[in-house]
Amino acid sequence: MATNLRERMMIRVCVEIGMSDRDIAEKLHRSAYAVRKWRRRTGRGKGLGSKMGRPLKGALGSFDSEIRPHLKVWLEGHLGW
Image (cartoon, rainbow, N blue to C red; front, side):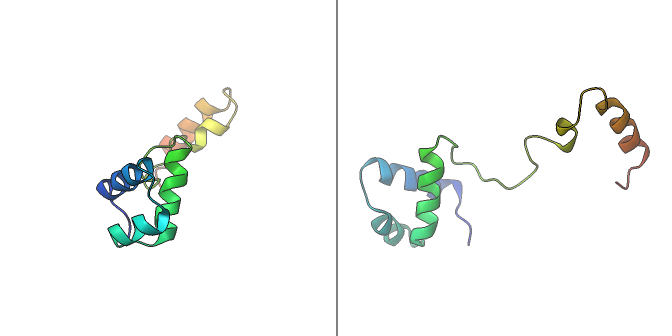
């Protein structure tokens, strides 16, 4: 079962007050692995948001700027791609 934002915030608060991963996991009825995952993510400054959903950078961003307009025309012309 995925963690929700409220649980991730609780993990962050518990980390800040010095609780261990095991203690936090028992308190929130989660696995120590899930707690460790969110501890690492927030420690690196990545925030509490999930990685689910559309990527921040799209496929067109990886192509040369001269090619992008042509690719965009092709993609708009072929909606099934």
